Image (cartoon, rainbow, N blue to C red; front, side):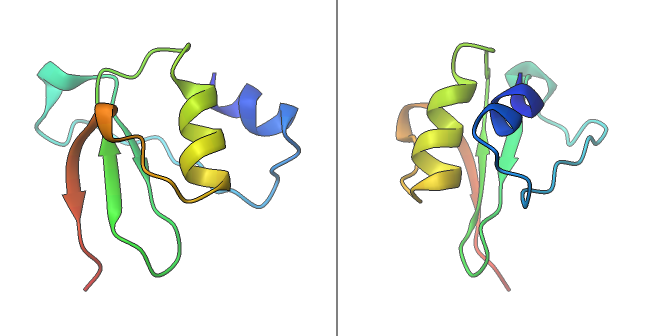
Length: 76
């Protein structure tokens, strides 16, 4: 769903990486969004229906989708 949404929006400069468990399996599906110079935001229990909102609001416009946030990691 993430790759399809990025392609639909012609966002070809976004890097997507699949990883293993980060210790929050009960909150899967997890999606991290890292924008340059900003904190890493982890979204939890992400459904395919939530993906367009995360992409449009956070990836494109920089607005965190608070109701889906399960973690934040400030940049070092």
